[in-house]
Image 1 (cartoon, rainbow over the protein chains, first blue to last red):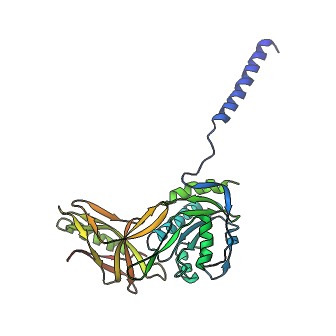
Image 2: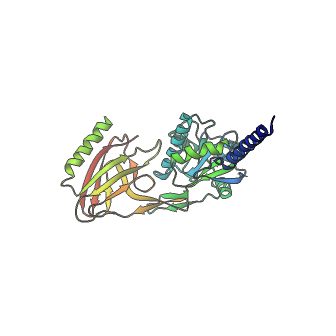
Image 3: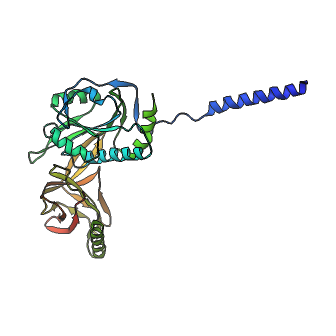
Length: 204
Length: 135
């Protein structure tokens, strides 16, 4: 090999190496969630003793084994609760159609256990599709869960003796290890979930 | 069938629009969820007159009571606020839609199908509409 060929080879090698390094340097970052707040360290849930929509006793391990989108609401809520659950159901359907696997389960935790029996909760959540989970039970046990997660709710009396409940409108993502991993703030729209969930669920 | 009924209502509303001071569009009266005695209604109210219109009451033979409510989300907390009245400024419209102002429909009749709603402005019924409930 003469010196001229050697120089060309060296220059070419350096150019290829530089190109590779530069392209790595400028490579687009991994996709980031658009709206979800992902906890740097997922948070363990407290122990609780509640009932599912079939009246079975459940504790914090009820979330284990699948991803869960958890909303805190109540069945006597005609506007925001069905609206939010419909958004989650629409997002889940769209994700399913796009081939997302696994799909999260939709969970409604009652903030009105006084009126929300397992039976009424079952009718309510079944309206939004199959495989949804409803959780109700003793108020003190629900408070254990909501207090740990920073979920607010408050009974508000009405003039006619009835009452309504003000409540946090966030949706929490609980991972298959039963840990609180991400939070979606209100107002909710299906596009956000369709965009963000595959990114979060793909992370180890 | 539902679509043609809605279309008929829309045509009737459109025909009446010239003279009616208040016209409703995008009407959705939700059937109560299974096992529930409460539901929500949504619509847009157009004020075609040159004076503000204030809705003070809504009544219906198919519901024990109807209230005007607003869902307000502040700091990620949802609160339901009862509205004593809703005012539509002259020549403008107010939308009642999910997550905002809405009608809270209480104590529905059994076998809800077509519902009639009377919108009161003080002593007067200023708008009557009929629509099928959405299931």
